[in-house]
Structure formats: C-alpha cells, structure tokens
Length: 477
Image 1: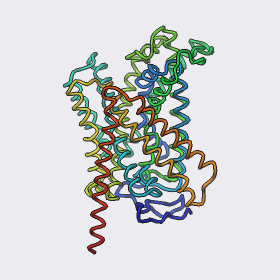
Image 2 (image 1 turned 90 degrees about the vertical axis):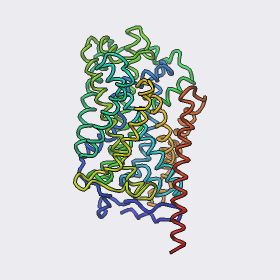
Image 3 (image 1 turned 180 degrees about the vertical axis):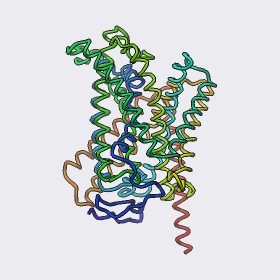
C-alpha cells in the first residue's frame, strides 16, 4: 500500500489516500460504491457532451483551421492524453469527490490547491452554462423553427436547469445511467452518418485536407484552442471517487478511455465533415446545421433529424453531468473550509449533496437566463461561457500535471517517463492558455480573461480570510 502523504503547514490535510486494498475511506455523506465502471465512464463522457462537437464545435474550428481541422483535433487529442496520463496516476492512489482539487491539495501549497479548487468549480459551472445555451438554441430551432425569442430562451433555460438539478438530487445512479444511454444513442447515429459518407466517397484520400491547403499557422493555433474545449470535463469521473465501485481501478480507466474514445471520434468527424462539405461544395465554417447537410449528402436525411434530436438530449446530459461534478467539488471545498460549512450537507435519503446541487445549478442557469433575456443567441452563450470554462480547466490541468512528479516521488514511484509526461503536459496547457490570450480577442471574448481573473481574486480573498480566521482561533486557544 502506498504510504499516506503527511500534511504540512502549507498544505491541506490528506484526502482519502489509499490503494485497492485500503481500509474504508470517507464517504462524505454520499452513497458509497454504487456506480459500475460503465456508469463511472458515463460521467466523463457526458460532461464532454461529445455529440455536440460535430454539430457545434467542429464548424467553429473549421472556420479558423480550414483543411487543418483534423490536425487541430489530432494535436488536441495528444495534449489531452498527456493530461489524462497525469490524472490517471493520481487516481490510482487517491479517490474523493474533489477531483483535480484533491490531487493538487495533496502536494501543492494550500493556496495553490485553492486556485485549482476555485478554477475547477468555475470550469464545471461555466461548462454547464455553455451547454444550456446550446440547448435553448437547438430547442428553439427544432420546436419553434426559429432562433426563438428572449422569453423562449429564458423558459428553456429554466426548464433544463430545473430538470437537471432534480435528477442530480434524486439519484446519482439514475443520472449516470441516463447520461450513458443518451450519449451512446446520439454518437451511434453520428458514426452512422460518418460511415455512410465514407462509403459514398469511397476509400479515396481527401487531398486538400492531407496537404493542409489554405491552412495558416495562426488559424491552426486558434483552432487548436477551440478543439481543446471539445475535451474539457473528460476527467470528471474523478468527482465520483466516493461513489464508484473500486475507484482506484475504475476511475483511471474511465479517464484514459474517455480521452481515447473522444479523440478517435472527434478526429474522424473532423475529417469526414470537411470532406462532406467539399462534396456538397459548401463551407462548413459557415453552416448552422452541419449534420443535416452531411446526412443529405449521405442520402440519409432522416438521420440528420435524429442527430439534431440526439444533440438536444446530449446537451441535457451535459448539463446534468456538470451539475453532478460541480456539486461534488463544492462539497469537498466545504469540507476543507474553502466555502461555507452548510454546503457539506447531503440528503439523508438520496445521499446526494443537495445544497451544493442547488447552488451550482442556480449558478449555471442564472447567467444563461440573463443573457437570453437580453437577446443573446444560444450559440453566443455556448461560445462565451465555453471559453470562460476553458480558462478554469486549463489552469487546473496545468497545476495537476506540475504536481505529479512530487506526488509520485513521495510514493516511491517516480520514473523519468513520468517527469517527461508531466513537463510536456504543462507546456501544452501553457501554450493553450497563451492561445486564448494572444492575439487579444475582440468583443465579449476579450472580457473573459478579466472575468476569470476577478473571480479568482474573489476566491483567493475568501481563502485568505478563512486562513486568517483559522490562525486567530489557533492563537486564542
């Protein structure tokens, strides 16, 4: 068994360290070990909402990277796999509801752990907000046959948020199963369209894509940043550390499998979508309903409608997964004194973090409702809040990758390969962050770094106040 990490003055206390044969770990009031390996995998898959990438994200990447869209996804897959390898090594020794925050807090100074906690909380909440925006956009187009009105946007936002909060509050096992089946059905339909397109085209290479015709270096760099957004949340299975069966085995596998599965699907879809629009002689980067066009090119228009329905339901699954993950991060933050203690509470019968679910659900839905009321489109909300979430994820990934060598050294498991993976993963995340910041974005996107920075300052001020209170109480005693 790995030796437990000793707490130091500038570190948070040890959090649920153990091995596959370790004694029972704290449940934090959650229902212990009820999720199967597939249900644990479903959490990561659903947080990524992979069905939305072919419909919404790949066209945005294509608008920047053009024929290099597939390459942007190859590079994004490599970067995410490096991070996944880092996270998986932590997950083999530690499990708790705190996800990456737990891992950072085990090694890094407490203030760095607090940065990861607040960043990760924002990332999950903002991702939830992003997919809610996508939901009301698709719902308006499918049900109202128009972009909708501010009132319809607000009503759709309230509806999906309330339902997701109810399911997350009621039963984590039910929500995991629901997310798994939703994503499986949606992805199967998308893969069918991809296969039909390739069969119709024949097994001939798309030369403009392979030669990267028209692609620029800056376009690839900016497209890569957007491609990374397709993967964010792949690690969210780690938030189920108290609820997964045999978590030190199932969670690392879920992390690696979700990254590989998503990468393979995204690369295949990126290549095929650009190919399909070449065949249709249209511009993928300007398409509002790409899967409908591709299904028509594949001579299976009914599949386009089914995919749109699948994407709509997948967006709901993504909302549910984000509420589930954010609530568990907030729960552990409360246990470690980063937020009010009342958020430690769990429902006595359902054994779910009810107060944290309520708070994170409202925090995710409220900004979307406000933006919808002001007339913002769902696609604008999807882009704005998704980009904001990316800041939180990239920072959390970078800190955890940087912490890995010291963590493994304490466990007597540090290898040269682990140092290399850690260093390359850190560099990849720093480059991704630089790609978000330079060149300076225009319009609303230019305000996002300041919003993230202001939020982080608030979180660290709260942390400093809590630490000061702890020291004063210790002095008085």
